[in-house]
Image (cartoon, rainbow, N blue to C red; front, side, top):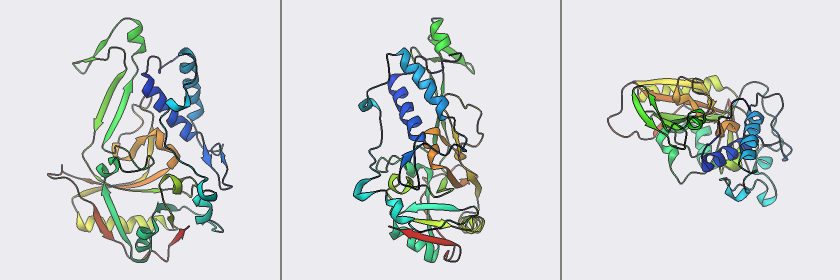
Length: 295
């Protein structure tokens, strides 16, 4: 391999990478069968999987499955995927849509009255969330491979005038982002999402533009000092994509790429002087441009 960038990567980080790649190499289809993602989608995970095979080959073979950190998800509990019940006989609109997965008790007021909770990004780091929801949204981490330096016997390097010791590891660089408000949706109906998000309902938004305009207007009416960002998330590989994105609030670790997230971000123009709190906005009834589906 011409660029063995995982050479010497710590075992626990390599195992986590194996989990992230395998999570994105499988899909739960509309037929309720587990298989590969659609072949017409850009998918770099087979290449990443090849790198993993090469690296584990050097280390003596693939790890024991119990050593791989993974979410315990049973899509076929209680007779089958809950999505099969939620979306049974539903014909999705032909045009662009947005989908919000959640509990019916919260999504019903969202549809009828347009009541929406927008949480600070830091909220999603709470350990009580499921693996699909939990993520450190205010930190982005990059890993700079040091296998060439270590093969030359070096254990430290200079980065912008600072001495960084890595010893037998790679250089791990954290990027800390001030907290901001975040609202997440998916760009389509995906059958694994209800189970992953512990959801029993979904709101399918048939007019994404109207929805986003109303939400942004309602939030800015309460917090006019905020800057708005919206669009599909950019998924980055911490070992390879050092320049893939310029807006950290709109980027996420590649382990979550299977979610195809679309997000609306409200970023304070000045650094907050106190911790951010959830914001509740009212955008009016969504019944004429959205559908509520539940199991």
